[in-house]
Image (tube, rainbow, N blue to C red; front, side, top):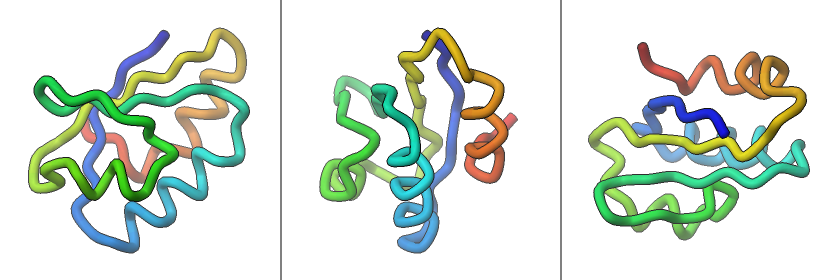
Length: 77
């Protein structure tokens, strides 16, 4: 599992983020405080406080570099 911090501060970003994640047959979780939701769920994402960075847990062993390249626009350092 790999964890990265992401920012989803607009509706368009959320839509493209979910579309990008849907390309992979891997589980993704978003963690905000004590809440953990499926990152492929648009409704779930909108239930979080999107004004702050969110942790994304990537449950993958292979293709991690490919996943990180596609998620680069959302990842914050």
